[in-house]
Length: 210
Length: 321
Image (cartoon, rainbow over all chains, first blue to last red; front, side, top):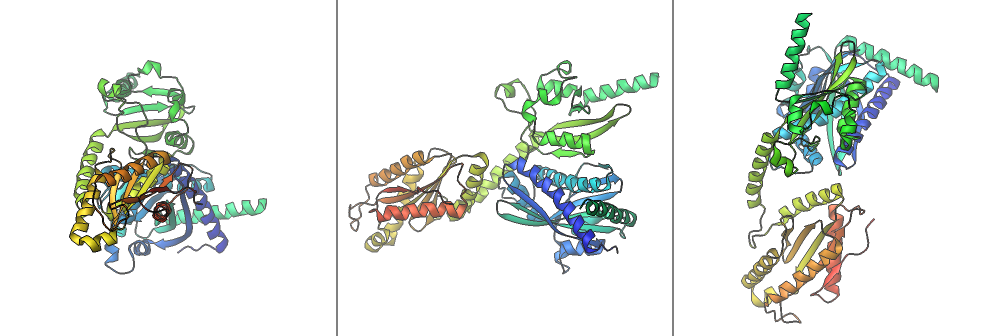
């Protein structure tokens, strides 16, 4: 597994925080309320570890339903990006954003669409900052909405099970509600090496200017 | 050459036939395609849109989410979706003349995607689909769920909203008021000397008193958005959306007078009648209230009314920090 030193790690966290900051600004514009988002930490995991992180420690928790919005990106590197929240949290987010409470235990069709839009805004912003880092353009697919166990969602992309997951922890704050979720980038090993290289180039540039 | 010509003809035919709105803008945001579906539902022919700047045609969309979605498609090559729920009907599309005369826009879902055109650089395709049927179906589902829910949301004794209903409603109305910058008023109403009433007349008559007061108050509310709830034992609350301090005060005085008009004898009360004290809190657009803050303000006003001798109305005046 790849490891980043502290400097590289911090640089990547900072880059993603800029990305979700832009996403939060777009969402504030939609709802006319302050939306705050931050990325407190990131980690590199294999897929099984990632599924476990989302699902929880014991077997029963791992069957918990997760809501995911995924987009495929390719160009400078190829990745499946997935925004994930436990299903009850996704209900909370959408209903906070929409400002109406629906007494139903699942997202309705229109709410799923709204969740896809929220995912779309967050993923485009995160991938956009990565594209800026690589100074290369990426192409993206339209978002797709999934519900299932964490393992089902992570494998829905059809990526190899030996791929690496770059996991972002995301805090989403709206109207005093704080909701914790994840963005996973499923990367192959070569993309990961490229990423590390780009972080070093970025650091050189930043340090050089400093 | 003729293959190409056939192909262009085919694509034009398909674009005209699809049951979907399609607009294409070039790198400078000029409209280069406006399909027949768009002509039909906007009532604007392609000849009047082609070559025009997208935002000069849709001034109200400048700076909105679709603006950033188009920019993102053209600059960063990323696609975006705009859901009906988060973006209420951005385009002036009408199902028919009747809908147009009512200014009732079609419910829309949008996809904004980059399209690379060989030799002409990057363009942006805006696809619009009509989701009116799904929205209607969900409204029905929601309404039915609300009816079911209301059965667990009413107070067993008086039949008005219970505390749980109040908690959900105040939260919803406060957020709505903040979002749209409207005023919101809250009345806290307490029956004066109710404990002595209960002790003197017995609990059954105490219950009858609560039922009569609740029914009189609920008969006074005119708007479907106003909500009367039983807040606690002999305490009631009225949530008044879009209501400023002055209008809330008028209603509070009417409430007080209405209870006197019930003419319920109360030997343990100085006025020999059942009366109420009312506390008012009003949130204006500039106030930064949260739910506990607003309830607290109304509560304090109610205590002030009690201290002022009961059977009166007091409004909370200072704006909390």
